Picture 1 (cartoon, rainbow, N blue to C red):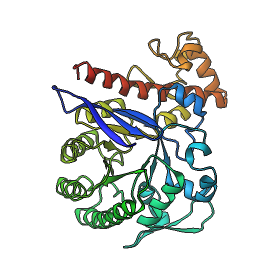
Picture 2: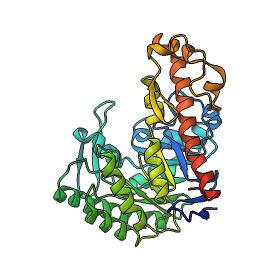
Picture 3: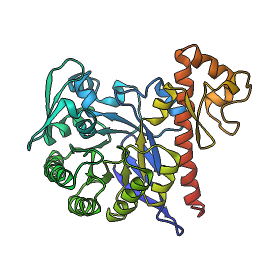
Length: 357
């Protein structure tokens, strides 16, 4: 039921086109995954998400654990029925929240204790519990608990974080194997901006039977050059016959680079987050719809874009909606941004298949 086939490998770069088979349908890679943190891609219905061309979405274990909780989702027989999304779902572990909510968590050898940002209650996460939560969610791909070290952390701090991460991921992998669940578990490579630690992490985790591997701890404040150095150094260290995933990547130029380095999966909150601030992708650039030049502009956002928004509305109308603080503006701009990234990556897949990338 689960299989990763590499359909074509480029002769011009490390890029490859593949198919990841899951119980909820195939995922044609490389692929961009919109983020639905709380079992919803902000502002979009499942039908609207599907119309963007999205094949798979990401949800977050930490947030769903707090609200509505695993019991409610389990009663619906998993996230797919809960949110009416019958296609593949990947769930993040909550490890990123160790970084993003660092003032509300304490790290121990056994796991992490969070103070809920909702009501101040305390919650513990450990490697086994994170797997159990995702098992209740019935996501197609699960991620283990890890520590996403902050940008600029010292070598000693990142090394200490990595030791805990490796211990947790080892426990998670062994527990996952014992459960014999049909869900896949990916390993997450950490190590900050330190090549020695990235190599250590990739080599250590490659020794375990994870179904795929992710590069974590990027897009956390480092420069584009540092980002490319981390991806370019780490991706070749991971097993070529398994899917490779860079977490939190969502700018076209970064996606292109990573795909040329042989990475298969990506996710990012950027397309919907930018839309909520009036920013849209137009021919590879980020443009603010509030600009005065759009006040009487009757053309679509991007004349070459086939998304619902560009096929039905003018720049002037979209500017009006945003200036008037109408909720529809967020939906229409999000549709365009998600569509743009999904189809940008799909276009690169076609370029790989045709031998041009």
